[in-house]
Length: 632
Ligand SMILES: Cc1cc2nc3c(=O)[nH]c(=O)nc-3n(C[C@H](O)[C@H](O)[C@H](O)COP(=O)(O)OP(=O)(O)OC[C@H]3O[C@@H](n4cnc5c(N)ncnc54)[C@H](O)[C@@H]3O)c2cc1C
Image (cartoon, rainbow, N blue to C red; front, side):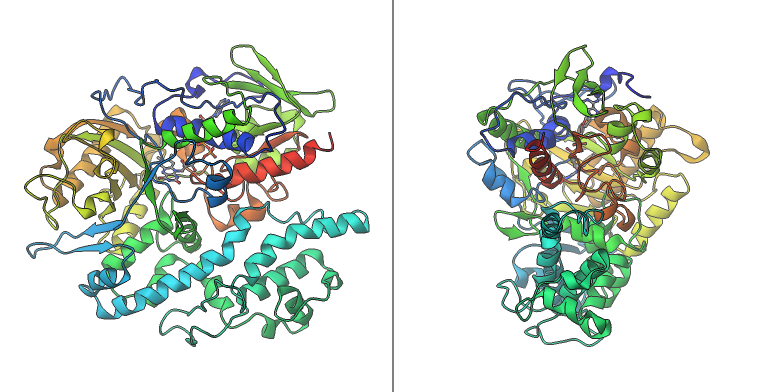
């Protein structure tokens, strides 16, 4: 498609989350730069100018006034804490409502009232809840949390740096080689985060009954050894490792001539979590289906995957890697909707001298005689010159639509074309005139929100098999007949989002294929039929829900692609499967934010470390670009 202009639908909207999704990461790239670089910058995406309507009505789904929706993403957790701090987002207006409790799974069962599972940060209460289903699971839960927590800590340093540049290792002068070795630092940090002496080190346990459980205080060498092994393999030069103090990863690499010893006793358990189907891991820890299915939702969210799919364990980790107000794994609602986060970042950027151009679609990247990026051409004909261009559009849009294909290596183009963008998500935003009342936890007479209303409410999550069935139907081209539904009511904590007594309900549902069986497309009838199925399911858990609906906005995978530029509707610009992470995101040998076009960087969720309202890719890309800028 070369430099053909995209249709106007690419123009950013100011529809709450639409706005957030359109702009925030590119603005972040700018805001992350030191304030002394004050030259004008252009973001192809637009922040939401103050005073604009927050809801973008569509002809088919008009919404009543007074409701504010986070049209796509709706929960915050993954935003890197250093971004909060560096950009002083609180000072720039960001307010978050943390949630506790955070997860509610009502059941459909014959007993009256039906049971439900409520998970929160109070461990004793959470254990009591789990004990309704299994005493054994209640006992195992704190250990499971600690085990996963250790793993998240180990992976954490990898999020804030580019993946190791394997091509650069061992190349150049001695000085350059030493500099290149620095790229191993995050890996080494990851490796040592479980080491004795690390203040976070609390020890970790494999699942109860799995392998040899070890006492919590016993140190493990797993990650350290894995990292050292990796470093060793990458460099093929064991001699690089400098003499190191005892107990460091460097030292372990010296011992890798006896790799069996060096791998450590815990490594296999962590390796298994990363690579196994999450159902296998959860079966090792727990026996009660409502608990396993509730936990498994994090392993499949946004992924065309079942809990039985290998690698789903990593997706779970990705969703518990965040933190809110210092609490690991916590999620919350942004006051005023997710668009308010864009606003805060935009304020931080403009305060540092950025110029933000809203409502400007990029038509193509301008290239110099030597094929280097020289700026962007906008759809309105304006040319904006710049030595650096950072794109948070998907890799597919950035490289297959905004750059003439002959300017890119053929194998690179092929890799980008091959990225798996299969997506199961249909988001439905609903305006209701009262809070849903669940059979398992009926509303109070005054109709005020109860603790479970602030949670992610998991429906059709009674058992892992149910999720698998929902997935299987979609693989045959049929939207699930009992879809996995995550129902959230941000207005339960943030009443300003809806008129008095009314609420906004966010339904994150899967599984919906992007193309229906027989090649049918998602016409109006198909969209409404699926939404009706979802509403029927909710009605089973919360009778009266359907009658409370004032309006609905249905976003199937093709809608997400059309409105937000998400390839295949994939909420992460590309699946978060193991083959599309770290070294291989967006393509092997191109994971360091640079692209085959000098001066053009990928800074969105198609780059490492992937999707979510996280900012990590933007911040990392900005740092790489700044480094290059010094040599221009
Ligand atoms: C329905 C849904 C729910 C989600 N829920 C959550 C959640 O609750 N929490 C969470 O952390 N994450 C969530 N996510 C994921 C999260 O929103 C994304 O991972 C995140 O927005 C990625 O940011 P980004 O800057 O990389 O890309 P995007 O937010 O996708 O921004 C890229 C933008 O570039 C625009 N664009 C494309 N081409 C051009 C062009 N030529 N000119 C100008 N602009 C262009 C696109 O329209 C697009 O909006 C959700 C995503 C979806 C779709």
